Length: 78
Image 1 (tube, rainbow, N blue to C red):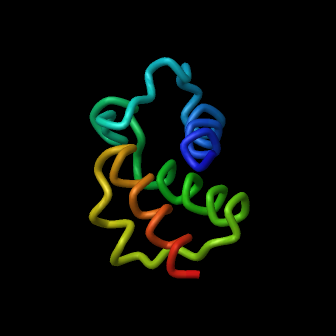
Image 2 (cartoon, rainbow, N blue to C red):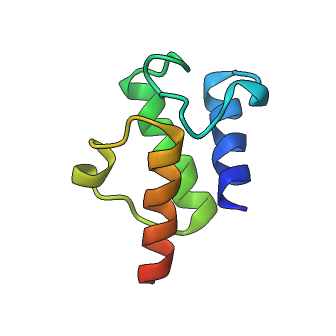
């Protein structure tokens, strides 16, 4: 479910096709996201998932799979 939400947000913010999004897909290189895009993605994910991301955690994220792992670990901690 989290992957579907993540994909939906990426499609909405980055105007990419969902078929381009895989666990190994990078935000900057593959999807062409910039810092403003990343900020918008984080805000939309926080709203959709009722989570709060720490900047120190987000800075380490390069791939969709890493983002998903962070989301899942945060949900387990709640």
